[in-house]
Length: 306
Image (cartoon, rainbow, N blue to C red; front, side):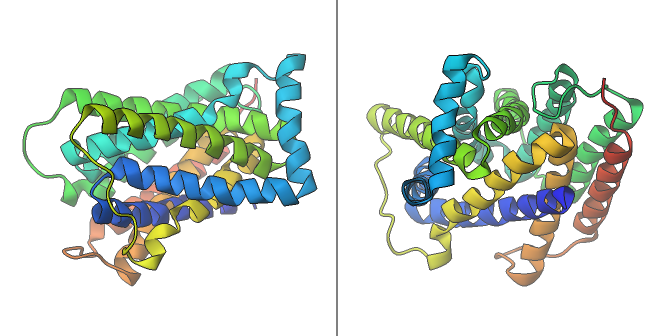
């Protein structure tokens, strides 16, 4: 069940990317679209906190755990890392393109997941860096590279943009680990999800304010887009809640690889069911999805605690 949910969460992540991308095109600013996505999710979660006692009690356990020392202050900052990811996404995708961005993200996420599990940053405990786990991370990078190979355009490559994308991938693994610890302390995944959206929205609001103050980019008009473009926050609540529940069970690496397989499958499904203009179903995307499944199997069999 945990792996199935991680796969579903990855598929939902691909769907959210389509939603946020559509909204970003409509308003003309990816950062503003990301802020709306996080902010709308925060509104929904705030209502849940106010009316669901178990979630509210879970939220209250988090600062109590920080004061008691069972949770360090920096371990509650997963939402800031999520905000950093979408900020980097908005700035580097126009420079690198989606294909190279995805490869850089997965490379950073896969490598970082190995180290995060090794040092025991997540709630699943320390796990050795075995040959199988390293091989699974390499297979995941190869799967994404293969899946997007036909979408890589020729031209100059910004090393700075690639490094930012790599760093965002690294922080995704760290975010998953510390969000899992928060969920364990809160005893409710939605409590950790609320904190993630609260801090992520705050980080994006600051970034958007700075962008508005120091550039010539003005806020766009949010109304008028397709209705489904506004549901990114709802989808985000679901897959982040899945992540904070699954990571304590399977570890960061296995979750990351299963989620990556889900993202590729979700992209494949969207290309079949709701293709965008110029999109075509090609063999390498199908092959990339299958190779991602192989990576998950290898990682699952290579788990080893220390």
